[in-house]
Length: 447
Image 1 (cartoon, one colour):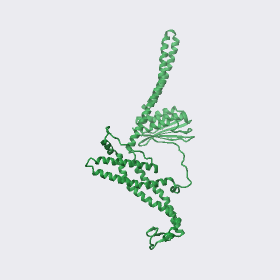
Image 2: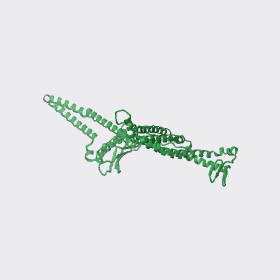
Image 3: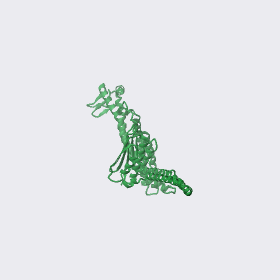
Image 4: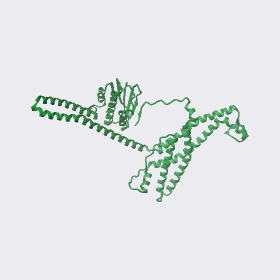
């Protein structure tokens, strides 16, 4: 499910991001992530290789299988540590993967071992411990070179005096072999000991200082992908969880609709029919004694029958309107628009009718949005557009009302969001205070 509403604009900074980056807390957190990543990766790699090799060598005996399962359980523990480290230092919302599911109800060692070996999560954690080690080593070496080099060169004028006082050299050496602190001078070497050279050296160091945070962020982008892809839940598990949540929402919505129908029947048509039966009973008793009074009562009962029939028609229209079933979205939406207080223009551009479920959700979405226009928006004009792309049906309702619509106040738009989410739909809301309001719904195109 996803919704979009108006949010405040991000606060602007007087200092550009490239100049703020070396001093921001994010830079130090990501730097700490790289520095702590290498020892964790070394331990994880050594652990995985040791356990996997030992268990592979013992597979000819009974001990190899449970030893492999124990190793996979240890990899899961390493995964928990890595998710916590990424959550704390990279601010990565790393979800927990699905737990080990023991299919057999009886307890014991072998069901647990079998569940661990069948779990794709366990093997992805093992893969992470192997793949992450070379990348952590590369990131550590690159960061350990750039970070101290940048700051040492940037601050070179402040510590250049160390060379002549303690090392017997005028300053840093720059020559064909690069930059060296001490060593025998060779042909072409120059010492960075005068003001222009020190200024250029400091400027180069400042450039490295400004570059290093972005380099570290780029390196940690790969770590984010590794953690999310190998240590998080699989796409299949995530999809199953979404479907279970959607199924619960659909069940709750269906139960609420049934309660609404029951309440409408009990308080509306049923109450009128009970009153009608009592009135007809009294009219039957008075038929011989007072024919005129009986005729009046029968006439009143006839009026009650008409009202009850109208209420039943409205209730049936609320469940599924006959015009939608018989003629499709364009006439059904036009009928809805005719009952709205605003002047509504309807445009439906569909090559054919979508699936009945999608068509019904589209209809009731428009119905709810038009009710909101009537009750809350104070709009005088509105527009309904329905069209399709190769894979999506799009619905957009625009009005010139007072705006301020969102999913937090009231239950109408929140209920629409849940109903659309149940079919992999999307609701986008653009409703600034003062208007206009534009609400766009996306549904899967099914026929």
